[in-house]
Image (cartoon, rainbow, N blue to C red; front, top):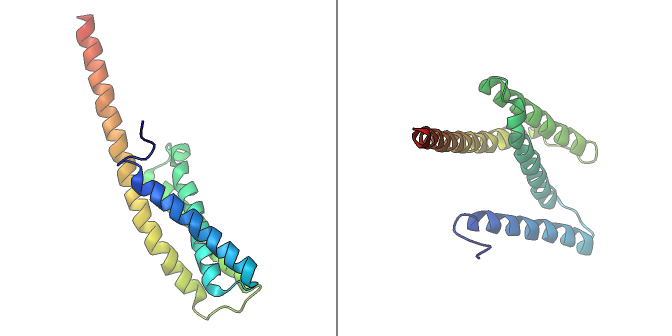
Length: 145
């Protein structure tokens, strides 16, 4: 049995890369005693990715609501968290005058791309499951006859 195969190879590479990158950032900050903007930006990207992935994964809890409303609410929640992270950072470091605008674009564009990919994949998976269910029902009907 192969643990790593062609279906999960890229995902495993991404997980390993992420773990190594976060460990490197933390280790550098600990050894050098300096936690710079570059390190902070990479960690913020990691945590925003983590939160965005979590929020997208919770779609099944809100299936009773229209899809567009669900997507917009998810986006607003995540954007608010991103802006809150910028505000929190501003309590310790001076912010650039365009920090909020830059975060808006830096968050919105990748999130929109990720959400489109996620929802297309989700609906393709649902379509395949419905086709499989239809085949099972047809074969059960044929078996009864």
